[in-house]
Length: 184
Image (cartoon, rainbow, N blue to C red; front, top):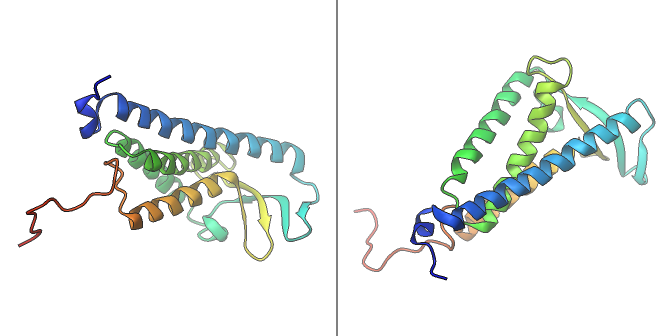
């Protein structure tokens, strides 16, 4: 089978597969986050913490109107806008996506952003100011949820791929072409 020449420009079946991968990863991350939050709210809210690894790692439900580490609790609307912007940017980037690793990283970022955005839109007090459900408590560190873990994992992968020179719009690291003198 002859490769589709449009794939080199982010079009055709190769790009569609990468977009499908991005959406699949985002969908799985979102579904796992949503189901975990529904489960912990139904079973653990208003109950004693469940020790997973002694008091070092517990399952404890808390509502967080702010960002990570409960920073900016009075700025919930700003975090809602940021999450919505992340979703829009990732969806727009997906159209030119060529790299499988970047599809996975952006999928994690998208799924996590959608998970926390869902909380901000639908949980009380409402009006795009809902508190995010956090439940993974690491002693001395933070209380997080699986959307947060997806966002952090996607972010770490994005930083790693950037350091490695893997561009999101290409299948391999970009190198200067012979005779390319760069900026004059």
